[in-house]
Length: 492
Ligand code: CMP
Image (cartoon, rainbow, N blue to C red; front, top):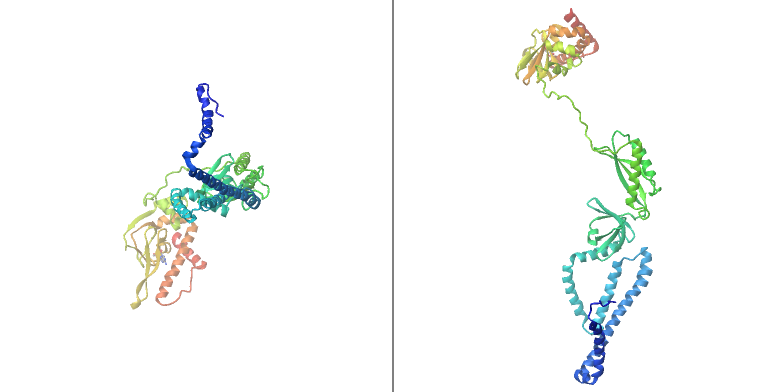
């Protein structure tokens, strides 16, 4: 009750009693004159109004009673047990609104005796206008109804809300009403998510199909830690954690290899009603971090290895870098640094144009060549008389050598060697090669093997011209024979 303040004038305290007295005293004193002034018609109308009011109130009371009956017998006794908890308020409200609408129709038709069809038609137009104005609200209402029918979650379920792959919140559904779904998170904050929005985003129900839900955490550990060790630490860490379920048992596994290290997932189960997901995450993370710490293992982080080395020579000089170029040639690959140095000093460089002939078949020769750059063709003359022509017996590429046959055996050049493209060759003289071969008998053997093979090719070319087959091949006896001849010619 509002108390008068000490400053209020005293006469104002008399105001209400005086008004009440006037209301009741005036009709009492002037009853006869009021009856003559107002007339019986007004009184009849007043009585009519009172009758309408009672009838209207009766309809509304019926509606109220029906709603209560529905509440008690339908929602609470039938629906609630089958839903296993609270009945969504939205459904109750929708049904109550329908009952009230019917009551209003009853009032219009039954009490005021007006045509009901007109009322429905008018309400349709009004509904259209209101609908356009309250689009988003109506979309919330229908989304709410859809949620109640489809029941992706019910009151008491634990849900996780994700938007574009980002986990927004984990909480318990408290209510689904006309406009929104209320989610209570473990930090005791109530989130109202509009129903139309919740129908458009991903909601994971952690309480379905069973109350226990599986959770997953990722840990990235450096490549240097063996997966066996990492799994031992992670498994022990998650098993030592209180609050999570022992069955199904938690486990750690390798998930994937990333640029940072090996990623492991740790899966564990918990009942969100007993142990909230955020508490579970905290417990598992801290236990695993503790186990990693005790084992002296840290989680992987972004890193880069920097090696400092001399700038590599990106282009060898044919003149200056002879030794390095020689290393790439088949024949010289296995020579020591000293031998390479000796050989490089006894070589003469030739830069040749396309089409140049380096050695001519039948001529005498006392040098051999190493091809550094370019492409060469080896051909020889075959056939006699009208059948005389040249045939290609081989192709030489960088790193290969030629001219060794004459140099080592003293025989005339067995074939002609010509440049297919412009080329660079090193020429090694008899004296230059002798210096190396004296200390490297295995080199003579390698060369003898090549010579033997080339001889077979040459012989085959000859026979091809005469349409015959070569019987011989580069077997070890031919190679040995050749080797002896090389030795006797070269070293005397
Ligand atoms: P030589 O006989 O001194 O001169 C010609 C050179 O051609 C010869 O040494 C070999 O080096 C080379 N030659 C001969 N036959 C072949 C072949 N079939 N394949 C590659 N090169 C060959």
